[in-house]
Length: 92
Image 1 (cartoon, helix red, strand yellow):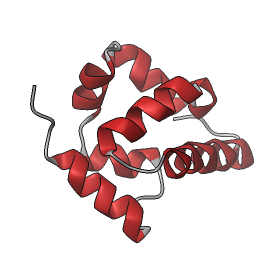
Image 2 (tube, helix red, strand yellow):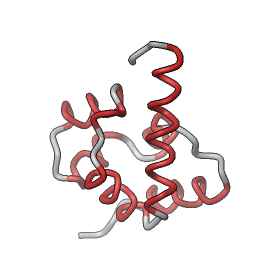
Image 3 (cartoon, rainbow, N blue to C red):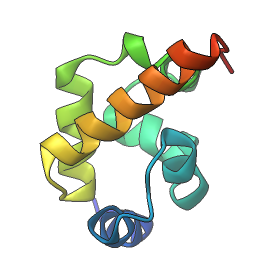
Image 4 (cartoon, one colour):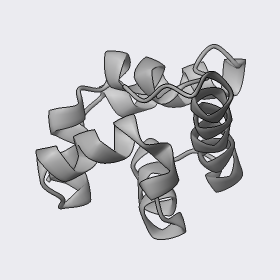
């Protein structure tokens, strides 16, 4: 199976520092594509996007593998989103 070419675009955006949130990620690579490639249901992945504290390291590492990006960078994006939602007290 060939990987969606948008993953390489997302990787470049992570490396340049332009991709900072999960919302930025799903604007580049649709959540339907990511959910399918992760082997999870769209509804489950959507819930994780709206509640970043639900992400596990396993899922974060799998996203990093799809992006061929540094695992720590992906975890930092998820963590930053979690902190932002915690600060604003708002869930999407």
